[in-house]
Picture 1 (cartoon, rainbow, N blue to C red):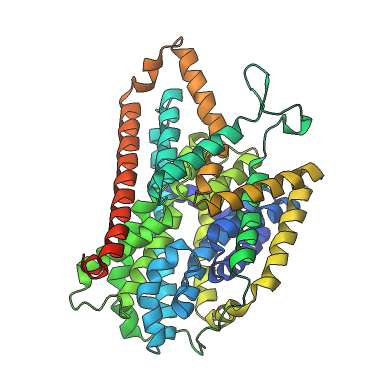
Picture 2: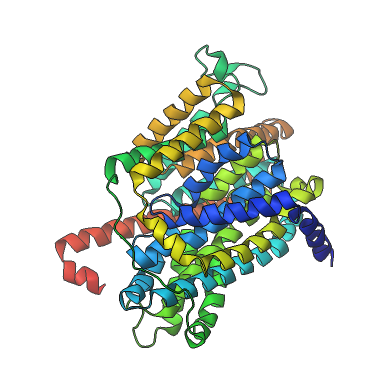
Length: 510
């Protein structure tokens, strides 16, 4: 009953006309960004953060806008996967396996409708899970001290840097780069300038928002200009969006199974929607693929991964809001937004500013209804967006980035910093070094250092304080487990690649 009371007050916040309008705009823009191949939710949210600042929105309203963009991107990613066999983002990759064959077989409307409904089911399930599990996690987090938070941040680096990256060494290197960048500025304890090289502009360190816009938006522009400047091919024409009831009815169990698997995957720090989509598809294939129809246009192969990636997106908000640890790359960007607004995610957020948390949860319920209404009748409009040439799209991305960042501080130095981070992101991506761990290091490095110093101060310099509690030991064990899994999967992937080169037929059989 207490949770329902909080949710009721959240709807009072969410039903403010400004927040309703922002949620609707975020859903529409997010669907478009998600449908355009190559951008994805991380870039979509990063590009629009400067716009939220330039509009001088209240903290809760800005979070609602960008969270709805996040959810909209997860819905929109399925469109190009089904129509072009090009995933709009990483989590939508699994939808290509059966969605595109359905489209080729003349069942594009059915695939789009089933995927839209599955996205709705997964997102609603994850929002309910967020409403129920985040307060429970907050109560557990009360027992965290400085040593436990240090271990938790270490786990975040191990998971988001190791599990989601194809090369654990490179992704951990990215996290180390982020930690180094986070050290720039005035030391909070000694007051000594660190790595500023006498530049007064660097005394406050790098602003996370400026770094994120550069690392994602500007580097994305450079990558696209280098490799994808040609216009996109046309998509299959869609004259209707609704499937027959018998097609939808058969996929309902797959939607619920995918939602459960995806939400659990999303809660794990660093796992993200990609793992949720992959696991949902794998579980559903083993559970219901009795006739070997998966991969040839089975509707269940569309419903399960779509429900899984949308459920994982909502699940990733749980550790971000309750612990201040992002569950995915997009929630890392949202975490930067909150920090820039002087809001500290974690257990005290639910106590000190409940209107922000519950207003967001209530808005997500509304956003899912908006997205379902947008993605079924207007799916033909969104498919036409796939033909927008990149030479027409990229100038808008650059314009929003520069105007938005300049509006933050009216400093040309910040524009130079943004371009510098854009070049850094371009180089890192060319070297196949993940950018998300860099952002994570920049965001969490200061708090990680502060908790380490605080723990050592409490214990009078005794390092055993970091392993003095069961919670810390469990977190370190989980860190070792995730790193071990990352190394194992990377080794297995290289081994399969080598086997494919030596004996392609045997590798395909394996």
